[in-house]
Length: 294
Image 1 (tube, rainbow, N blue to C red):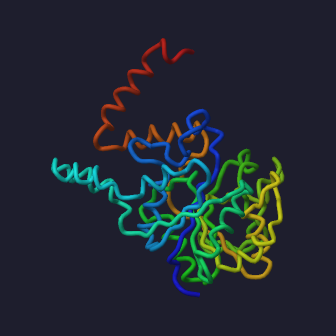
Image 2 (cartoon, rainbow, N blue to C red):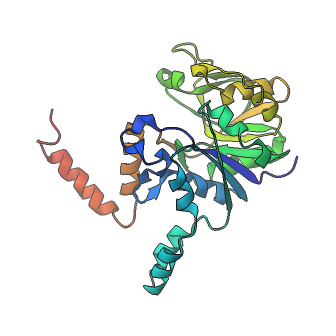
Image 3 (cartoon, rainbow, N blue to C red):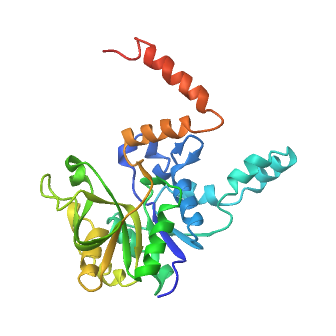
């Protein structure tokens, strides 16, 4: 197995939790302050050493392609006006090749990953889900790549969640522990409340060996009648060891409204340009009895 050079970012979901905003706009293009959510994910991949990214899209997702494409008129305008800071911001993804493929049917995350099989070939690869943004001193994906280089096995990023939230995630059943790394006995997709084998939840970052496509290719459906990536990882784990790694960093859930709002507020507070003003606005709102009612 060679180095991890390629990454898949599934972005074909319909974003129904954010309707009506996502009727015409891809969920992945909803901004956190001044950057679309998918850009945070792409930037993590770049900072982790990924050279080629394939984004799996669906109908109505052309805005994603346009966002990462060159815009000569805009760039030329910024150059003439000497707005070099803005020019640098819009060219952040210039150091990576981004490719696109469509998932023609909404068959689940596992199917979306399978759609990119020809792009990956016979190499280990990364998967990054757009519903999770991770802020860390060392990029989350880079942590997983380093673990892969030690083990030469698939590595799944996990973090602990509250026991009452385990039914919302894929959960691991750890067999052995070595520091932050776990050898896994079973992977369980969204266990029923009170039945989870642990509170270590899969958090949208994966390093996978190409053998995963053998199991995804069987097109077996699981929870929700969809082809689940977690189910294929469980099958892979029966043939070769799959590890989980409790990565360092703060994970933000931008896949549902409350998490998206919380992330936006926190990122705005930490923004050098507007942070202090946002803090003042929040204080005013908290003290406004018409806004905050008992």
